[in-house]
Amino acid sequence: MPELRRDPVVGRWVIVAPERADRPNAVVRTLPDQDDPASCPFCPGHEAITPPELLVRRDNAGPPNGPGWTLRVVPNRFPALRTEERMVRAGLGMYDAMGGVGAHEVIIETPEHARAMPQQSPEQVEQVLRAAQERILDLSRDVRLRSVLFFKNSGAASGATLSHPHSQIVALPLVPTELQQELAGAERHYEEKERCIFCDILAQEARERSRVVLETDGFMALSPWAARGPFELLVLPREHRSIFEQSTAAELRGLSEALRLSLRKLDLALGKPAYNFYLHTLPLREPPSDWYHWHLELRPILALAAGFEWGSGLFVNPTPPEEAAAFLRQTEA
Image 1 (tube, helix red, strand yellow):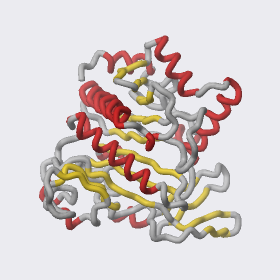
Image 2 (cartoon, one colour):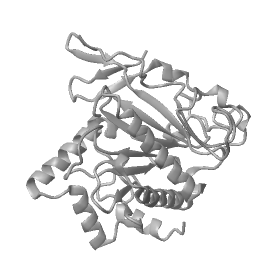
Image 3 (cartoon, one colour):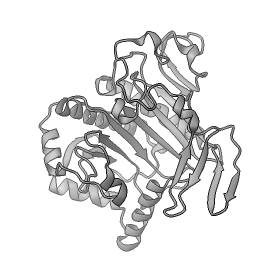
Image 4 (spheres, one colour):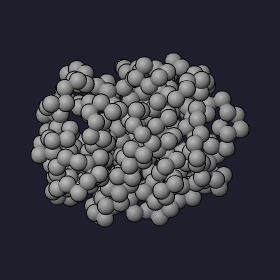
C-alpha cells in the first residue's frame, strides 16, 4: 500500500510505494530488449495485459481494449499512488504521513514498439500532448488532487523499465517541493518587478541568442543559464501562459514540433542518450496567473548525481550552456 511521507527537516514529500519494486528491471538497470515485442505489454494484441484503457485513439471502429489503436492511456499496473486510497493524514510522533491517494497513468504513445519519440511524426507527438491535456483536465475534477506531473523516462538510465515508447501522468494530493519552489520564486520576482520571470528569461534569451537552441511557432527551446546538467533544455511558450491544460490546438502543435526537434537534436548530437522530460504547470483548479509560466524541462542522462550533489543540493555541470546550445544549433534535425 503506497504512502506519502514528509521529511521533517526540509518538508519534502516522498512516495513510499513497495509495489513499484515488482516492476520489470526495477532495480537492475539492464537495457530493455528493443528487438522482442513478443512479451511487451504495450504492443498491439497484448491489450489484455494492461488495465482497461482510460483514453484511446483509433484508426478504425474496433472494440475497446483491442488492436487498431494509435494511442492508449491506461492505469499503471504498478502505481505509485491509487485513486482508491483514502485521504487520511496521520501523525507518528514528529513524523507526518497521509494515505497514498492519487493517480498513476501510462500514455502508450504508438503501436510501434521501436518508434521512439524523436522518430515519431509531428502528428503523433501532438496526439501524445493532447492526450496528456485531456487526462489532466479529467483528473482535475477530483478535488482530492492538487497537482499533476506529466513526464517521460526514455532509456534504462532514465528509470524506464520498458522500451516501448510511453510517457506517464502522476496526480498528487499535494504540490511537490520542486514546483512549490518555482511558484515561490516566480511570485517573488513578480512582487519586485511586476513581470513574469519566465517572460523576462525569454526576452533576454531572444536578445542574447547564445543559449537559444531552436524556435518553432510560439515556442522557444533554450539551454538554461544555470543548467543543472549538460545539454539540459527548457521549452517555453513565447506568449505568457500559466496553465498547460488550457492550451489551444495551435499551441499544442507548436509545442509538439519544439519537443520533437529538441529530442531529435539530442539524439543525433549525443548518440541517443537516455533522457527525462517533465511538465511544470500551475496546481489544479487555480486561476490563470500573471507571475507563473508553464514549461517543459528536458534532461539527457549524461552524468549521475553523486555524494557532493546529494549532500549539498548543488549540481556540477561540465558543459557550459552556451557551448551546449551552439552544438545543438549546428545539429540538423
